[in-house]
Image (cartoon, rainbow, N blue to C red; front, side, top):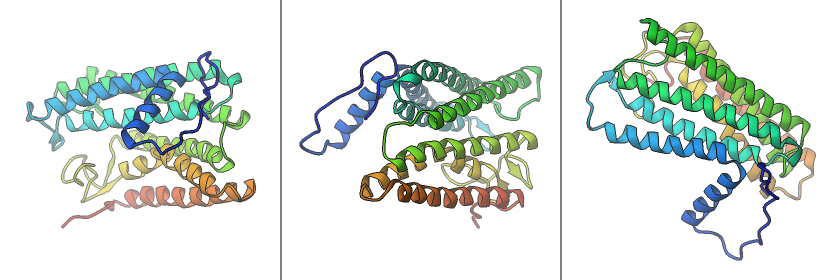
Length: 291
């Protein structure tokens, strides 16, 4: 059950007699999300609009940035920001009422941080240049530094959210609760890989950023690319809670300890995959080498 964190009573609805259709389930998800966390819901809708803008500009602008269409990266980050904001809004809604004020502050801080990052990416695309690791001019360096400040703020807020989830048990089965907690931990590991990219002033190991990459992802097919590990680490925020929810839903007869052990085992496999991708890239080896 989702709780309404902004001074609203808990949501209580009768159980549906039939399974909702996919479109109806999406509408219900969006309604509940907006009622639970209007800040992150609204920031997500802004990213929907930005993604639509990037899609509209794709056929109208033939400029390339690092060998890719100038509006490809803004489109990708708008979609990524949307998924992140709505996922976090949904997870925070499972925290109990005493955390309401903290959740509101986290939500505002995360929303501002992600919107600022996405807007800078769009601004740099409009200028026909890169956004990340770009210090070629004072303006580019200032924008890149601003992105770093807000991403650091977002990371600090996620640590705060993790502390809340450890101190105040969220609603749900034991597997789902630990899926949320561990998902945040691995997400923070993925964020640290982003810090490694800043240290290298690029995401490619063994070559310059740009060049041939995997379709739809852009990950280098010739050299090591830290973005693969970064991607998998960040999306633990969706994968681990979803696995925990499925485990708790299908294994309600299992004791809590068994659910937690199952969640821990899956998390270790997931972290192992992130670590393999990271060290594989550090050796200059591509995630997938195309002939």
